[in-house]
Image 1 (tube, helix red, strand yellow):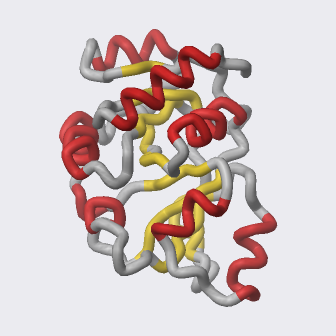
Image 2: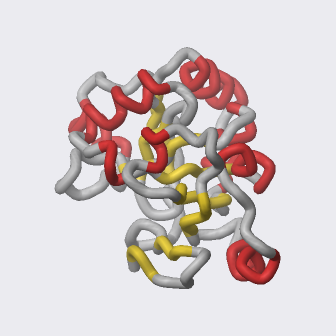
Length: 186
């Protein structure tokens, strides 16, 4: 899953310029952007036809990239979260007061994951940031599992596509609420 360093630099450049990036994740191609760039997030939501109220997932290469977006719960709550990372487990954690509403939607939590996908992790490192990660599809349609499907669905509307192999999951990662332990998405 090696990406040429030039491709990672180009993806990071687009990230910082407010662009939309597609990249492989554990199960499907993801669409991402700078989570602190309101215009980029609005453009992504518009492209997906996804309501802002739903909130978005952030992926990161390490926990430090997530810290600005969350209020860290007590150690007993965090133990199962940290034990599942890096890995294909997305958790809802309490959102920091500064976390933009375009990330949390109508919730007081933010969905986060430390990705185990090598290329997605390299992308987060190249961007020096967590990034928005939502499935590459128009809401209600099947997520793209190949670059060919990705290109046909979005026809020039993406600023950069980081090509690579998907992980081994058959469906997007499960989402669990860290505070209650409740499974939100199987």
